[in-house]
Image (cartoon, rainbow over all chains, first blue to last red; front, top):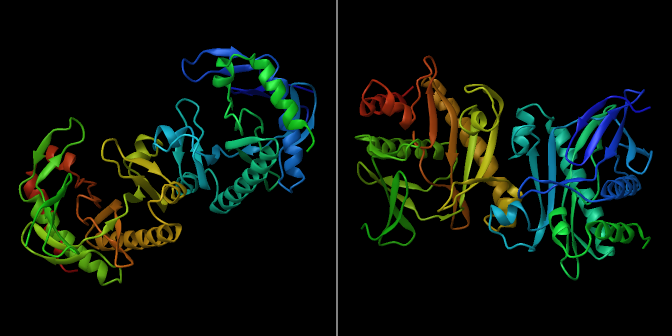
Length: 235
Length: 235
């Protein structure tokens, strides 16, 4: 089934299959820690992200959000629809962190009155640049109708996820989403996992982000394993 | 009439007046050339920008775009309404230059199919950062209704100016605008001149931008004087 590797990113590899319309997505354990660019590994994280993504994609489908997820193939692999990806990363922020604190001096952890949506052009060589819908349309990455749908869908996904995690006593600080075209429709692609959902503990503020998890006293594998158990516990 | 200096920027100084609702805006000849940060002067440019801004603000008013302009006071000064400025610079682009070429590798001079609007947070210490309407509203700089009006008005101003300059065989590459509140209304503030309108010669591509004008063989004062004459010539 699995054929040539088509793509390798920070957290995943994509492989072609016998059917051109489908891909195998394989999750890696590697972690690229942002500060010094060193590669580290968190044992079992690939499996957890694969499992959580599969679960959350199905959860999205139950809310009529269409995704590329077809089925889980193995502990680290899922079968997905082969999307014509729009090279834009959509970030929806609920709580100030990252760019908002670094560039705009917002106090970290501040709850935003309304979510902020940002768009980044995914670039191979350089750091992703923030752009707006006018740029995206002008550069031909998507039509303005597509961007309208993407913005609305991203906002809906964020609202569903925020509520989902809140019930598990986790704050969804921000979420990164990617979309692609498949047979005339826009589907949610990429993954839905701690790699793309920035999660903080509601009570203690503990951060489920690789750089923090790796620094914490607790073992990083255990931390993600516990997080997985909490997320998958039916509530 | 003219009282304490309230503000000094790259191209202008603002002074208070006897009436708190009014300001005197004085145009400077200084030019800050971006490359090496050196200050140079283009003799007479302040007068030209004062005259052109006054003319173009009145031209805008004739299209029912409200501006802060009240009247020209002297060769370098105009009386304006004292706006509660929104600390955002709106850039409307018609032709690729500047950020589009430097950051997004668009070919310089490419005519954009639709104008691109960008928003920058004006910052005292650091370089202005590009932001979007979600940020502006979230940070409390303007309401989303205000931003809706600003975006529409900016687009209208750009269309009027583009056409105005086109008739004078000049291309409006991009224009930078600022707005402020005055007695419950949003008015166009700042200036409308070669300082804020990037103008290229339609036929030869000659650039009426300080760094290019200063490098050209012709005297920079003469270049701007000729540009002034062309712009003010009734067509």
